[in-house]
Amino acid sequence: MEVVKTVILMVALTLLMVFIGNIFGGTQGMVIALIIAIGMNFFSYFFSDKMVLRHYRAIPVTKNEASGLYAITERLCKKANLPMPKIYIIRDKTPNAFATGRNPSNAAVAVTEGLLELLDEDEVEGVLAHELSHVRHYDILIGTIAATIAGAIAIMANMMQFGAMFGSRNERGTNPIIMLVMALLLPIAASIIQMAISRNREYMADEGAARITGHPEWLQRALMKLDSYSKRSTMQAATPETAHMFIVNPFAGKKVDFASLFSTHPSTQDRIARLEKLKYT
Image: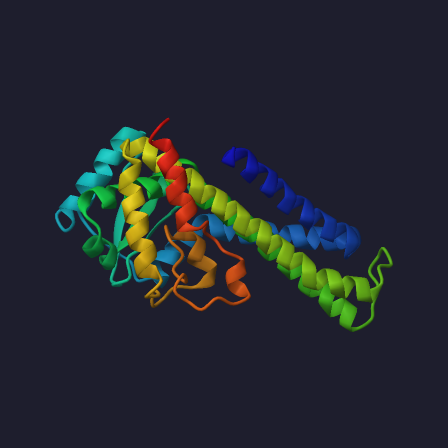
């Protein structure tokens, strides 16, 4: 069901971009937007993982330096029939983790020092299984595409807003006031769709982790601990652009505002409830 939802949301995001292209700029505007989108996709596909790891100052570790972490990951990779990813540790006391890389052969998993200190071995295995499930289902690639399309929509909306402020009409003669309203509302719609895709992939990764380990309760316990801690602390280098990558929202402890309505993660209570149902399937 979550796969179907993701496909529907991806189609909706693409159609939204096509709709804007038809309204604003005509054929020429659409071509420009597509060129921008292709360029953003190319760059994100090949370089986004390196940029994220560098941003969080993730340190690559060897098997000798993190033997326990490697042993768990190797065991999970064997169960999931995945190649061994690169392992990184982030020197941050806030417990969290994420996976990155464009495909299973170029994947990396990063965990914070805080996560290793907070969780026991079974809970760490549940978290790593969640991240490997993201890798297995190409969630990083899907998230990158969704973010790129949403970004392209935002660029097109800015062009619409610029044209509307100067009272110009596009090739199809759209009223500047309508252009301005659309310029404000369409990026919001794109963000909502993008966040919905992210939430669906989290549910899928949770289920994938439960299937790989055979112990949904391991991830349940980990999520409860991570959620409780995240409400009291925020990762030092966390950014809204990368929040969707983490197993729990790194901004969960911040005061609720308008931006927090666009949540990249489903509630921890919902995730735990879904994992509970898997115990009986």
